[in-house]
Length: 500
Image (cartoon, rainbow, N blue to C red):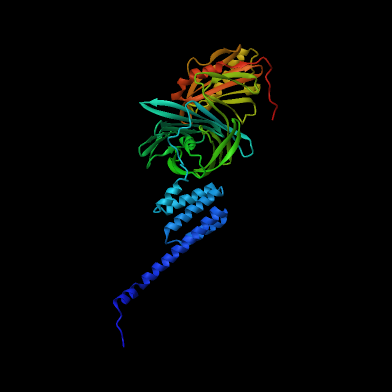
């Protein structure tokens, strides 16, 4: 006899697939929980980190549906990396948790405790009047130049700002100046000079950067989204990066020569003890990549966070001095090979030329942090073959002949050459006859003024030369005169290097 199915039986039949799935899900959760417990036991009780990590990875592969188990497995995998001392891998694992499992608040909150602060914009490690000097070398160890970085305070039209300067030589003359608003650190103005590229002035405004290229007096406006930083400011901002290993950030940096901005990745990759000219210091290493060139920076892990070392494009710069500038004072430089001394402003720096002309005995460059223009002093033995007529035995007459010869050379090299003032001035410096003249002209289309002084001692000539853009020259002329007039010679005979 056939019986009709009861309502209960019919419902059970209809729900059986879902009941089966629920039983399977519960069985799966129990299995995942047991697997997680196995990993925790290996990690915490046995200290078997590799075994625990293998279990956590297996659990992740099996827990695609249950995100709670996946998130906890990811968290515990990251803590295993920490216990192994692999900080970078741990940070990557914690970041992966935060990015993939944002809905798992418990584990995201726990992971964030381990992630580095990355950038500390409110922490100001620099101070006004500080000066950092880095010597640069080729991969062979041969010296190639130096850079001097300074910090000053200023105020203009009620706006207080930091003024960062970087000036020196690395194969060519470099001069960078950036002004940034003191509280927000928003860039205001910058200028960038490089011998091969020329001078660029940039003004940073909301949503745009306007750059003047002095090579052809053209302006270009670059539209930006959000804040964009100048490259020199970027170097100082590296000192605001948290020293915690694994910290990462991307900063938009503007290139005035290309007139574009790029996102520059920055990552703290480790710690190291450095032996430097200013002592043995603990440093943290920062890796970045700018304009396709990878660079590594070493920053002192202390409250000053000084730039200690840079490796970039095969070159290496190392700190040789970190000091406070004594403004308004002059200091004395003693020539290494020419037995002379000369005074120059405390706020300036001096660099010995690493490439001497064949007849040079000594050549030094004066680095004025306020200008990219050149001033230098060099000494060389008098070569009578360089003069059209035989030099007089009378020193005063001979100096007139030498000055006339120099004027003739300038007249041929500088377009629109014009002698200024009363012409060639006759001076007496350290009881020696000297000559000095001011002139102006155009060089590569740029209007310039320059001063040239020359003085003789024994069979040596000492040439002092400075040149600036015409608009900036007059404010510095008194300082240049003071430098030239400060030359003093020792009583000993001039020491001359052997021919190379």
